[in-house]
Amino acid sequence: MDIKRVATDAVNETIVMTVVHMDYKGQVAKRINEKMPLATVKGFRKGQVPKDLVEKQYGKAIKQEEVKKVVDLALERFVQSERLNLLGTPLAKENENFDWDAEELTFEYEIGLVPNFEINLEAENNIVKYIVTADDKLIDGQVERIQKQFGKANPVEKVTADADVTGTFINVENGIENKTTFSLSVFKDKKTADSFIGKEVGDVVTVNTKGLFEDDHQLMDYLKVGHDNVHDLAVDVAFTIEAINVSEPAELNQELFDKLFGEGKVASLEDLKAKIKEDAEAQFAQQADQKLLLDVQDFLIENTKFDLPAEFLKKWLQTVGEKKLSAEEAEVEYARSEKGLRFQLIEGKAMAQSNIQITFEDLKAFTTNAIRQQMAQFGQTNPTDEEVQGIVARVLSNQEEVKRLSEQVVAEKLLEVFKEKANPTTKEVTYEEFIAASYGE
Image (cartoon, rainbow, N blue to C red; front, top):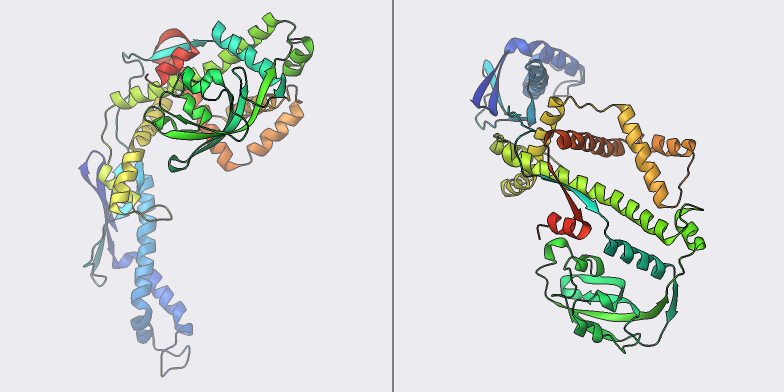
């Protein structure tokens, strides 16, 4: 057998395989002999059919099967021996006039190669690493929410300026149906708030989404509108009132502090505000890190130039998956996934360049920390090591979870490299400023 690579360009090649009779004749003959005792041909007893008739009836199919086995094995070994770094898998070129009776059988396979490129993690950039602080406005607002959440809700018959209103926003045409609770101060326009005053349970108030709140993103919270639609949505929504309550704020005392944070951990309003600030800024730091990672990804994708075997990948996409794609569907799928593929390649290069490796101990430590955080969110602040490790063992026995968590460990390690190498500009902002920067508004 003769196998060679024919390059089209730096990322596209064809593997050409020439198969001769000697490559498969022994296995075909063996299969014919195995078939003879089982062959049935009209006019002959089972097992008594002449060999030439068996070959005539079954020989072509057997030959094709055996040649395919030879070709598949040779292709696999060739890819390994050549250490080809492929995108997708080899695609057989179709040949409608293929002659199975020819002395030499030639098979061609298109392949797409991972491009050769370099990345510069230290390139000049305008990436910002945000330090998000919890300002007094945010902290005071959280204290008020705690007092309201743990206070006593007194039902009243009619909506007043200080009432909390519970009900459901509905706009069938736009798929809006969400039950929520709000105070009238949430609305941007006083006229909107006033339209609720005096209303009773069962009444319906219609409002328009355009400029409904001070920040359009609040539509995501109160109406469950997707981010892509928050600025352009201008439709009427009907709100049916289901409950009206006036809250009696909870007293900020030791009983409440212990209920919220555990016995003795918070002892005063100053301690409470410090705890709120600490917890909020820890959460903000995670969000800021995520934005930094995304910003670095976008920068590297934009500034790391390399060609992909695009046409090959579009053809390959038509052949994979349970549902075969049309050429048009593959074109759409490739456009959707190209950016992710580019960063996947860049990520691999960055890991190799920075000698990043993921060990089982890394994965176990990351999972242990994640489990402890989740348990704390549900009030289990002091689980035993035995309890935690039992959960960790169950999680890591699931291959899908291992894959998902491994990706997060990689992202965490890469983030540390990016912080060091990309040398982003540090900027301290409030949470409101961070949200504005995150959404480009």
